[in-house]
Amino acid sequence: MKSKILITGSSGFVGSHLVQTLLAEGQELICPQRSHRQLAHCYCPTVGDIDGQTQWGNLFEEVHTVIHCAARVHVMNDTAESPIAAFRAVNVEGSLALARQAALAGVNHFIYLSSVKVNGESTRKGMAFDENSPCFAEDAYGVSKLEAELALRELSENSGMAITIIRPPLIYGAGVGANFLNMLRWVKKQWPLPLGSIHNQRSFVFVKNLTDFIARCVQNPRAYQEVFFVSDGHDLSTTELLQTAARALGVPSRLLPFPAILIRIGATLLGKKAIADRLCLSLQVNSSKARSRLDWIPPYTVQQGMAETAASLKSHSASTKPT
Image 1 (cartoon, rainbow, N blue to C red):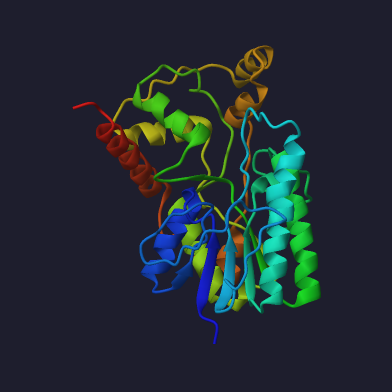
Image 2 (image 1 turned 180 degrees about the horizontal axis):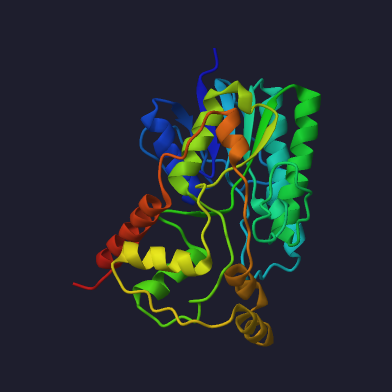
Protein backbone atom coordinates (compact mmCIF):
# COMPACT_ATOMS: atom_id res chain seq x y z
CA MET A 1 0.00 0.00 0.00
CA LYS A 2 1.28 3.48 -0.88
CA SER A 3 1.96 5.46 2.25
CA LYS A 4 4.28 8.37 1.49
CA ILE A 5 3.71 12.03 0.67
CA LEU A 6 5.87 13.91 -1.84
CA ILE A 7 6.18 17.68 -1.31
CA THR A 8 7.68 20.06 -3.83
CA GLY A 9 8.97 23.41 -2.59
CA SER A 10 9.71 21.90 0.81
CA SER A 11 12.53 24.37 1.47
CA GLY A 12 10.34 27.39 0.75
CA PHE A 13 8.20 29.47 3.07
CA VAL A 14 5.00 27.40 2.94
CA GLY A 15 6.74 24.11 2.19
CA SER A 16 9.03 24.24 5.21
CA HIS A 17 6.07 24.81 7.53
CA LEU A 18 4.12 22.05 5.78
CA VAL A 19 6.96 19.60 6.36
CA GLN A 20 6.82 20.31 10.10
CA THR A 21 3.03 19.93 10.19
CA LEU A 22 3.07 16.57 8.42
CA LEU A 23 6.06 15.20 10.34
CA ALA A 24 4.22 16.02 13.57
CA GLU A 25 1.38 13.82 12.28
CA GLY A 26 3.80 10.94 11.70
CA GLN A 27 3.76 11.13 7.89
CA GLU A 28 6.64 9.75 5.83
CA LEU A 29 7.86 12.47 3.46
CA ILE A 30 9.79 12.69 0.21
CA CYS A 31 11.07 16.24 -0.31
CA PRO A 32 12.84 16.67 -3.67
CA GLN A 33 15.35 19.53 -3.80
CA ARG A 34 16.66 21.74 -6.58
CA SER A 35 20.23 21.20 -5.34
CA HIS A 36 21.77 18.95 -2.72
CA ARG A 37 20.11 19.68 0.61
CA GLN A 38 18.94 17.53 3.49
CA LEU A 39 15.92 18.09 5.73
CA ALA A 40 15.70 16.24 9.02
CA HIS A 41 13.51 13.11 8.93
CA CYS A 42 12.84 13.42 5.17
CA TYR A 43 14.18 11.73 2.06
CA CYS A 44 15.59 14.57 -0.10
CA PRO A 45 16.63 13.50 -3.61
CA THR A 46 18.06 16.14 -5.97
CA VAL A 47 15.92 16.79 -9.07
CA GLY A 48 17.21 20.17 -10.29
CA ASP A 49 14.94 22.93 -11.59
CA ILE A 50 11.23 22.19 -11.96
CA ASP A 51 9.94 22.71 -15.49
CA GLY A 52 8.43 20.71 -18.31
CA GLN A 53 11.63 18.66 -18.71
CA THR A 54 12.05 17.55 -15.10
CA GLN A 55 12.29 13.79 -14.73
CA TRP A 56 10.92 12.49 -11.43
CA GLY A 57 12.01 8.90 -12.00
CA ASN A 58 10.83 6.35 -9.47
CA LEU A 59 10.09 8.86 -6.68
CA PHE A 60 6.35 8.13 -6.86
CA GLU A 61 6.58 4.38 -6.25
CA GLU A 62 5.24 4.48 -2.68
CA VAL A 63 3.54 7.89 -2.85
CA HIS A 64 -0.21 8.27 -2.33
CA THR A 65 -0.30 12.11 -2.34
CA VAL A 66 1.74 14.80 -4.08
CA ILE A 67 1.55 18.32 -2.63
CA HIS A 68 2.85 20.80 -5.17
CA CYS A 69 4.03 23.99 -3.43
CA ALA A 70 6.95 24.86 -5.70
CA ALA A 71 6.34 27.76 -8.07
CA ARG A 72 7.83 30.78 -9.72
CA VAL A 73 6.36 33.37 -7.38
CA HIS A 74 4.94 36.81 -8.03
CA VAL A 75 7.49 39.63 -7.92
CA MET A 76 6.83 43.38 -8.09
CA ASN A 77 9.66 44.20 -10.53
CA ASP A 78 10.17 41.21 -12.81
CA THR A 79 13.38 41.36 -14.86
CA ALA A 80 12.64 38.37 -17.08
CA GLU A 81 12.66 39.15 -20.82
CA SER A 82 9.22 37.54 -21.08
CA PRO A 83 7.61 37.23 -17.63
CA ILE A 84 4.65 35.21 -18.88
CA ALA A 85 6.96 32.69 -20.59
CA ALA A 86 9.06 32.39 -17.43
CA PHE A 87 5.98 31.83 -15.29
CA ARG A 88 4.51 29.30 -17.71
CA ALA A 89 7.73 27.27 -17.87
CA VAL A 90 7.61 26.58 -14.15
CA ASN A 91 4.01 27.04 -13.05
CA VAL A 92 2.25 25.46 -16.02
CA GLU A 93 4.66 23.16 -17.84
CA GLY A 94 6.49 22.13 -14.67
CA SER A 95 3.27 21.42 -12.77
CA LEU A 96 1.80 19.43 -15.63
CA ALA A 97 4.94 17.32 -16.12
CA LEU A 98 4.97 16.53 -12.41
CA ALA A 99 1.28 15.59 -12.40
CA ARG A 100 1.51 13.48 -15.56
CA GLN A 101 4.37 11.41 -14.17
CA ALA A 102 2.59 11.09 -10.81
CA ALA A 103 -0.61 9.88 -12.49
CA LEU A 104 1.28 7.34 -14.61
CA ALA A 105 2.91 6.02 -11.43
CA GLY A 106 -0.48 5.52 -9.77
CA VAL A 107 -0.48 8.43 -7.30
CA ASN A 108 -3.94 8.76 -5.77
CA HIS A 109 -4.15 12.46 -4.98
CA PHE A 110 -2.52 15.68 -6.26
CA ILE A 111 -2.85 18.84 -4.13
CA TYR A 112 -2.05 22.05 -5.98
CA LEU A 113 -1.27 25.26 -4.11
CA SER A 114 -2.68 27.97 -6.36
CA SER A 115 -3.49 31.60 -5.53
CA VAL A 116 -6.35 34.06 -5.07
CA LYS A 117 -4.76 35.91 -8.01
CA VAL A 118 -6.51 33.39 -10.25
CA ASN A 119 -9.70 35.32 -9.52
CA GLY A 120 -8.29 38.83 -9.58
CA GLU A 121 -6.49 41.56 -7.69
CA SER A 122 -9.37 43.11 -5.74
CA THR A 123 -12.95 42.72 -4.63
CA ARG A 124 -15.68 45.14 -3.73
CA LYS A 125 -15.83 45.59 0.02
CA GLY A 126 -18.04 42.86 1.47
CA MET A 127 -18.13 40.95 -1.85
CA ALA A 128 -15.62 38.17 -1.22
CA PHE A 129 -14.47 35.71 -3.85
CA ASP A 130 -15.82 32.20 -3.43
CA GLU A 131 -15.30 29.01 -5.41
CA ASN A 132 -18.03 30.00 -7.89
CA SER A 133 -16.57 33.44 -8.65
CA PRO A 134 -15.34 33.97 -12.21
CA CYS A 135 -11.61 33.99 -12.83
CA PHE A 136 -10.03 37.24 -14.03
CA ALA A 137 -6.30 36.79 -13.55
CA GLU A 138 -4.61 40.12 -14.29
CA ASP A 139 -0.84 39.54 -14.16
CA ALA A 140 1.52 36.92 -15.53
CA TYR A 141 1.71 35.05 -12.24
CA GLY A 142 -2.07 34.82 -11.88
CA VAL A 143 -2.48 33.79 -15.52
CA SER A 144 0.08 31.01 -15.10
CA LYS A 145 -1.66 29.73 -11.98
CA LEU A 146 -5.04 29.71 -13.74
CA GLU A 147 -3.62 27.91 -16.78
CA ALA A 148 -2.04 25.33 -14.47
CA GLU A 149 -5.36 24.77 -12.68
CA LEU A 150 -7.17 24.17 -15.98
CA ALA A 151 -4.50 21.79 -17.27
CA LEU A 152 -4.40 19.84 -14.01
CA ARG A 153 -8.18 19.47 -13.93
CA GLU A 154 -8.17 18.09 -17.46
CA LEU A 155 -5.38 15.67 -16.57
CA SER A 156 -7.31 14.54 -13.49
CA GLU A 157 -10.44 13.85 -15.53
CA ASN A 158 -8.48 11.80 -18.04
CA SER A 159 -6.22 9.92 -15.61
CA GLY A 160 -8.39 9.24 -12.57
CA MET A 161 -5.90 10.87 -10.19
CA ALA A 162 -7.86 13.03 -7.76
CA ILE A 163 -6.96 16.70 -7.55
CA THR A 164 -7.47 19.36 -4.90
CA ILE A 165 -6.84 23.04 -5.64
CA ILE A 166 -6.24 25.51 -2.81
CA ARG A 167 -6.31 29.27 -3.43
CA PRO A 168 -4.88 31.16 -0.44
CA PRO A 169 -4.82 34.94 -0.10
CA LEU A 170 -1.69 36.62 1.30
CA ILE A 171 0.16 34.16 3.54
CA TYR A 172 2.09 35.34 6.60
CA GLY A 173 4.06 33.69 9.40
CA ALA A 174 7.61 33.04 10.57
CA GLY A 175 9.93 33.38 7.59
CA VAL A 176 7.58 35.49 5.47
CA GLY A 177 9.32 37.70 2.93
CA ALA A 178 8.55 40.30 0.27
CA ASN A 179 6.09 43.10 0.98
CA PHE A 180 4.73 41.69 4.23
CA LEU A 181 8.22 41.55 5.72
CA ASN A 182 8.88 45.12 4.59
CA MET A 183 5.68 46.23 6.27
CA LEU A 184 6.73 44.61 9.56
CA ARG A 185 10.10 46.32 9.35
CA TRP A 186 8.43 49.71 8.82
CA VAL A 187 6.27 49.15 11.88
CA LYS A 188 9.17 47.87 13.98
CA LYS A 189 11.23 50.99 13.15
CA GLN A 190 8.22 53.11 14.15
CA TRP A 191 8.23 55.01 10.90
CA PRO A 192 5.25 57.39 10.54
CA LEU A 193 3.03 55.90 7.81
CA PRO A 194 0.16 57.70 6.01
CA LEU A 195 -2.08 54.64 6.41
CA GLY A 196 -4.25 55.54 9.39
CA SER A 197 -7.51 55.93 7.44
CA ILE A 198 -7.66 52.93 5.12
CA HIS A 199 -11.09 51.32 5.35
CA ASN A 200 -10.63 48.39 2.99
CA GLN A 201 -10.98 44.71 3.93
CA ARG A 202 -8.39 42.07 3.08
CA SER A 203 -8.21 38.36 3.84
CA PHE A 204 -5.03 36.73 5.13
CA VAL A 205 -4.01 33.24 6.15
CA PHE A 206 -1.43 32.37 8.80
CA VAL A 207 0.94 29.79 7.34
CA LYS A 208 0.20 27.27 10.11
CA ASN A 209 -3.53 27.58 9.42
CA LEU A 210 -2.82 26.91 5.75
CA THR A 211 -0.65 23.86 6.43
CA ASP A 212 -3.22 22.53 8.87
CA PHE A 213 -5.82 22.76 6.11
CA ILE A 214 -3.53 21.07 3.59
CA ALA A 215 -3.03 18.23 6.08
CA ARG A 216 -6.82 17.95 6.38
CA CYS A 217 -7.05 17.63 2.59
CA VAL A 218 -4.53 14.78 2.68
CA GLN A 219 -6.67 12.90 5.19
CA ASN A 220 -10.17 13.56 3.87
CA PRO A 221 -11.42 12.19 0.50
CA ARG A 222 -14.12 14.90 0.56
CA ALA A 223 -11.35 17.22 -0.66
CA TYR A 224 -11.01 15.26 -3.91
CA GLN A 225 -11.93 17.17 -7.11
CA GLU A 226 -12.58 20.35 -5.14
CA VAL A 227 -11.36 23.95 -5.15
CA PHE A 228 -11.03 25.73 -1.81
CA PHE A 229 -10.35 29.22 -0.58
CA VAL A 230 -8.72 29.22 2.84
CA SER A 231 -8.19 32.11 5.25
CA ASP A 232 -7.99 32.98 8.93
CA GLY A 233 -11.67 33.93 8.74
CA HIS A 234 -11.10 37.41 10.14
CA ASP A 235 -10.52 40.10 7.53
CA LEU A 236 -8.63 43.30 8.33
CA SER A 237 -8.21 46.75 6.86
CA THR A 238 -4.64 47.85 6.14
CA THR A 239 -4.92 50.18 9.14
CA GLU A 240 -6.07 47.32 11.40
CA LEU A 241 -3.32 45.06 10.07
CA LEU A 242 -0.63 47.62 10.91
CA GLN A 243 -2.12 48.19 14.36
CA THR A 244 -2.18 44.42 15.00
CA ALA A 245 1.44 44.14 13.85
CA ALA A 246 2.49 47.01 16.14
CA ARG A 247 0.88 45.35 19.16
CA ALA A 248 2.61 42.05 18.32
CA LEU A 249 5.97 43.84 17.98
CA GLY A 250 5.44 45.78 21.19
CA VAL A 251 5.76 49.21 19.57
CA PRO A 252 3.34 52.10 19.09
CA SER A 253 1.62 52.30 15.72
CA ARG A 254 2.52 55.61 14.13
CA LEU A 255 -0.24 55.91 11.53
CA LEU A 256 -1.23 59.22 10.04
CA PRO A 257 -4.80 59.69 8.77
CA PHE A 258 -4.45 60.30 5.05
CA PRO A 259 -7.21 59.79 2.42
CA ALA A 260 -6.77 56.58 0.46
CA ILE A 261 -7.61 58.31 -2.82
CA LEU A 262 -4.70 60.72 -2.38
CA ILE A 263 -2.36 57.82 -1.57
CA ARG A 264 -3.36 56.08 -4.78
CA ILE A 265 -3.02 59.23 -6.89
CA GLY A 266 0.41 60.00 -5.45
CA ALA A 267 1.62 56.43 -5.85
CA THR A 268 0.40 56.32 -9.46
CA LEU A 269 2.36 59.48 -10.28
CA LEU A 270 5.46 57.84 -8.75
CA GLY A 271 4.96 54.62 -10.72
CA LYS A 272 3.93 52.65 -7.59
CA LYS A 273 0.26 52.06 -8.40
CA ALA A 274 0.44 48.30 -7.76
CA ILE A 275 1.76 48.83 -4.22
CA ALA A 276 -0.92 51.46 -3.48
CA ASP A 277 -3.66 49.15 -4.76
CA ARG A 278 -2.52 46.42 -2.37
CA LEU A 279 -2.59 48.88 0.52
CA CYS A 280 -5.88 50.58 -0.31
CA LEU A 281 -8.16 48.14 -2.18
CA SER A 282 -10.09 45.22 -0.71
CA LEU A 283 -9.34 41.58 -1.50
CA GLN A 284 -11.54 39.14 0.42
CA VAL A 285 -12.14 35.40 0.14
CA ASN A 286 -14.95 33.31 1.56
CA SER A 287 -13.51 30.19 3.19
CA SER A 288 -16.84 28.77 4.40
CA LYS A 289 -16.64 25.80 1.99
CA ALA A 290 -13.30 24.72 3.49
CA ARG A 291 -14.86 24.85 6.95
CA SER A 292 -18.13 23.11 6.16
CA ARG A 293 -17.03 20.43 3.68
CA LEU A 294 -13.96 19.32 5.62
CA ASP A 295 -15.21 20.27 9.10
CA TRP A 296 -12.18 22.52 9.46
CA ILE A 297 -11.60 25.34 11.91
CA PRO A 298 -8.39 27.44 11.76
CA PRO A 299 -6.38 26.42 14.84
CA TYR A 300 -4.77 29.87 15.19
CA THR A 301 -6.27 33.35 15.48
CA VAL A 302 -4.92 36.36 13.63
CA GLN A 303 -3.47 37.64 16.89
CA GLN A 304 -1.65 34.35 17.53
CA GLY A 305 -0.36 34.22 13.97
CA MET A 306 0.87 37.80 14.06
CA ALA A 307 2.52 37.26 17.46
CA GLU A 308 4.49 34.30 16.08
CA THR A 309 5.42 36.25 12.96
CA ALA A 310 6.59 39.21 15.04
CA ALA A 311 8.56 36.96 17.39
CA SER A 312 10.36 35.46 14.40
CA LEU A 313 11.27 38.91 13.10
CA LYS A 314 12.58 40.05 16.49
CA SER A 315 14.56 36.82 16.89
CA HIS A 316 16.09 37.20 13.42
CA SER A 317 16.98 40.83 14.08
CA ALA A 318 18.67 39.91 17.36
CA SER A 319 20.65 37.07 15.77
CA THR A 320 22.00 39.32 13.00
CA LYS A 321 23.20 42.15 15.24
CA PRO A 322 27.01 42.42 15.44
CA THR A 323 28.51 41.24 18.73
